[in-house]
Length: 93
Image (cartoon, rainbow, N blue to C red; front, side, top):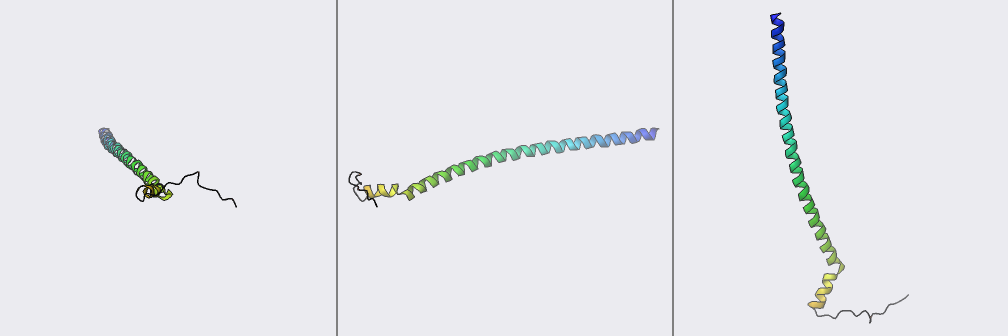
C-alpha cells in the first residue's frame, strides 16, 4: 500500500512538472507570436510607404511621357509661342 502511494506521488510530481514546462513553452510561444505580429506591422507600414512612392514615381513618369513637361520647357527655355486654339483648323476626311 505504501508502494502504491509512493508511485502515485511520483506520477503526480511528473505531471506537475510537465504542466509547468508546458506553461513555460506556452508563454514563450505567445511572446514569439507577439514579436512576429509587431514585425509584421512594421513590414506592412514599410510596404505601404514603398507602394505610395512607387505610385508617385509612376505618376511623374506618366506626366513626362504625356509631354506636359516638354511643352513647358519649349515655352520657357526655347521661347516658343503657345498654340492658339482659334487658329487651329480641323481636317475632316
